[in-house]
Length: 131
Image (cartoon, rainbow, N blue to C red):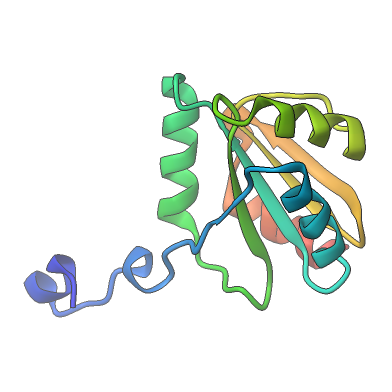
């Protein structure tokens, strides 16, 4: 039980629905993710570890996460450490590079992407439900 639960007797959504990130570090990981998207939608969060805006967007995304692995699988890319993978994402999926950025992949194709302050769970859910 987390501190929030102990103090309030209530359950904090972030406690019960923490994102179980799959790290994206190689081009082979990207290929596997694209293949996996034929079974379950996948979202890539591209994060610049040197950017405060990216850190704020990632924190907000994680705090509001209330999806589970049956709805979508979340993938995390540290684009500073793995820039070639980021370049491959742009090339393979035809999505212009941004940071921070989320890219929703379903059936092997990027069906939605957004960046910076436009990153939010509600819009992501809408895209999943409309695809």
